[in-house]
Length: 160
Image (cartoon, rainbow, N blue to C red; front, side):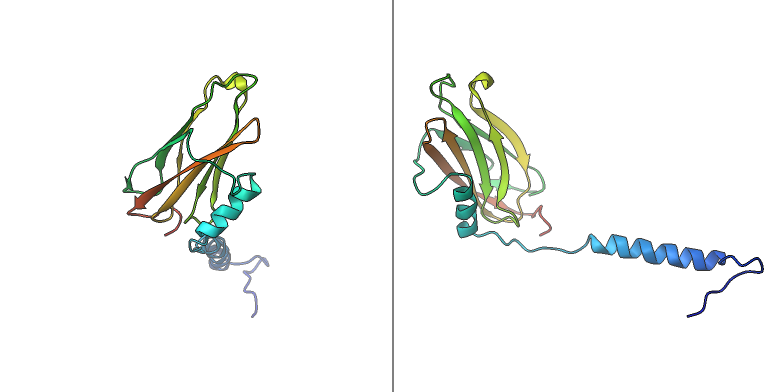
């Protein structure tokens, strides 16, 4: 391929525009690679185990609030409350949120101290499809409590 130049040796306006357009399309196209939801209940359990939430987790103390149906998975509100006095001797060290059907099951972790005053968090998350969401609380004595809720997602928010 030969370069076309004008009389003073510079590239022509059309050649510069073609090159710029080609570069812009290459950059923009690289962002359109879609990933399918690769998490499963097993990979979510592995993620929880990595966070210190294994098979020893008990039910109770953790209250997870999220809608039964999310019309749009791009922004799903959730709140978690853990029954704890949040004193120096008895407090929640961490709250982990895991989604079993997202490309990455680990949604968020909140690290807490007694200075927080109450073990309660609220946030929004993206969900790719209908799935279970798990909230787990790790206490300062090493005990773990968790709860799971099923949520139906009508329009996925993770590329789906």
